[in-house]
Image (cartoon, rainbow, N blue to C red):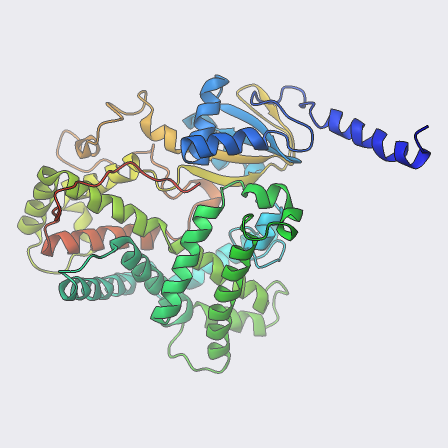
Length: 472
């Protein structure tokens, strides 16, 4: 005879297992939900098979003939929307403005809830995003002064390339260091010590390889950190949090002691904090806002430039055309952002790189605030929503010959540059990336400045592949 206490344990467990596999009414189509794990096993298997979570979701969307894919990862309902109409709805609808408050989000915010800007929600997010945008501009971000900083960094890059011309160089890593140093100048008034910066960027790269945009195993089964801390990525993110906290705390302490010259974002934040006007202005909040800045600037611009140089290497005809345009229109002087209106073909080339090599093919995550409808499906309140933007760039209804690299698609009949409304490099709506001015200027000035001085050729006769290894 089964003891009563065992029945009290087993029966609820069986009931929970059964009800956890039942999908809500009119929920989007997708893989079957298994007890306790939902669709996690299916998604992990396909991510491994197709090389990225984005490609796995694309394949699942094709299998289920839907632009709204529904899954369940452990207890979290996940919806992936594709198609431009659906993606724009999520970008602009206020019900999708929030970020998830899950285990991975808290780890990302140094163990805190609703902190920083990227993962903050509600009134705190509005206040601190507005403060960050306003006060970064106040110290020169996005203005002529920033262009001078980019040009100075370009000069350092060119000198480095000259000194190491006969050695193998990982240009993406060098560019990551450059863009972070420019950003950090406005945040903390100075450059990050070289060895610390290299170590930090190495950890960011490992983090990108270890986690998916949905958070991965660690987010779905948080207790696994006690059993497999290394395999789950918990040890890595703890190490990253510890090392980045050390860098940020050191910068804040120097500002508290007035050891940094000039005005920068940290000084302005500390002034606001000491004025006691808003209790959300705390030192911990400042740390996580600084972390948001570092993560946002650490990889996307440098990765995009890496693909731009790779494409120039693989297509010598395009590279020659870019060089001739630069040589004819600006000669030997340092490039500036205003040149983007004159260097039409070069600017069109960079636009095409953004389209053809999507650095962030999956945007999000967003936390749905109320029940919502997309394509006739009901997405329940509390679901996590991701936006598949990468497939928009290859939609034949939006682009002529989408699988052909063709800069000319961004040049109109009168020979002027066309700005497409179908590119979502920096997002849209209220969560749009506030760092787009630095990214655009850095990419353009650095690319033009290097091709102005150097031709890119294969040294060993082997042309590298341009198939992206998209971060999971």
